[in-house]
Amino acid sequence: MADRKPLISGNWKMNHNHFEAIQTIQKLAYALNSEDYDAVDVSVHPPYTDLRSVQTVIQSDDVPVALGAQNVHQAESGAFTGEVSSSMLQKLDVAYVIVGHSERRELFGETDEVVNEKANAVLAAGMTPIVCVGETLDERQGDQAESKVASQIAGSLAGLSAETVGDLVVAYEPIWAIGTGETASSEDAQQMCAHIRSLISDQWGAAAAGSVRIQYGGSVKPSNAPELMGQADIDGALVGGASLDADDFARIVNFRLYQT
Image (cartoon, rainbow, N blue to C red; front, side, top):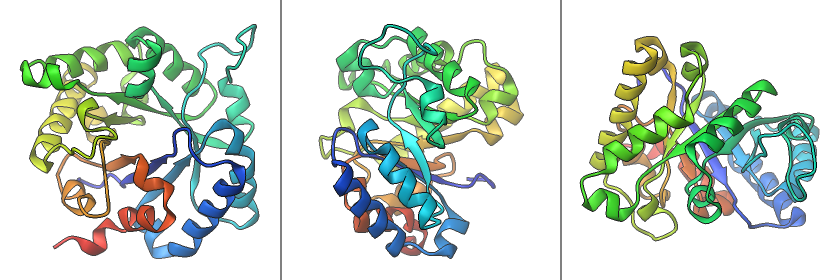
């Protein structure tokens, strides 16, 4: 993992009302200590309706957890009913924004071009995008996984400078392993994350490839986090269901304590 500090991000998806969100972040703060935060960066990504509540807890209790959002609209403002802009998120002290999550791509038809526009909007507001890429089961079985991910990297990061790419977070999430209980083997995950780093090196240079943080996402649990996080090119995890339970999420954050 070189000297890249791991980033463990909890994507709550459409779960937890604001009361539950407050309880979860308070329990998480109780479960982690200063040594944990020294070793690992942590972000939580609640639904929009919870952001202000979680922000208040983080600030009032001085919790060293970064606030994140799950999505953003690419426009700064306008007649986009139901959408939220990057400047709105920035005013809530959001630090990380997930863009191009597979559920956004698969269920809502987001293209690489849209993901690129969203990433640029996040960057323009001074936040860091977590850019998601990954293949379907058919694509993996058809030996198209690497080409699919290469296409997503090229399209989603198009036009960004090497310095900017080096400061990003890229999340590799095999679509067939999200919410299914299936997990890519640590070897499979490492192979694809190394492929992503190689793609970035080829297109943006060795310095960008050496500093970009690459997360793995796809049924990450306390039981498999230590092995996944032990891989050379995996710099963190984008955690779904297991992040809804503060104790489970804390154990994932503390993966280093369980590595052999």
